Amino acid sequence: MRLTRQTNYAIRILMYCAANEGQLSRIADIAKAYSVSELFLFKILQPLTKAGLVETVRGRNGGIRLGQAAGDISLVDVVTVTEDNFAMAECFESEFADCPLIDSCALNSALRKALGAFFAVLAEYSIDDLVKARPSINFLLGLTEDQPAA
Image 1 (cartoon, one colour):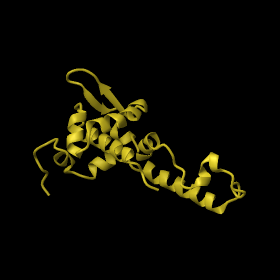
Image 2: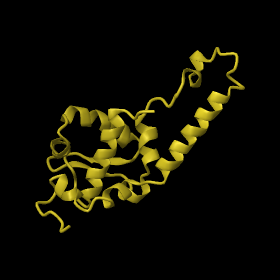
Image 3: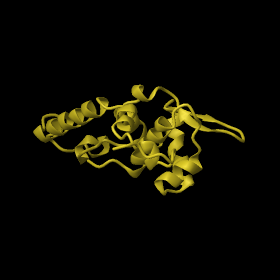
């Protein structure tokens, strides 16, 4: 299974906002930090806002911030908002469910169990965990000029 680029950058947006705690983050600054287009980030912002993971503040001094505490946003929250499909095999999708083994297939059962384990591990990690794992994140994202002592 491979997560989409959208999910990857959704997590990065949330990490940036968490690292920039207490301040509004601008999409232009986030795009610069990750060397990606602003348009791409705006596209990703929609589902994050709709799910309440991000809040937007309009106006001249506007920007975005986390819609919840960083410790309350799990990776599974982000993945389920940004990924369209978790079908690991054709038989997971209803339109391809013409296999005679669909209801008793050991492969289908094993893949569903694997997907459940994947979600369980993602649920163990929050955006806060990712940010706190890198003491130099603010420096790396250009939020501060001071690199922490090693």
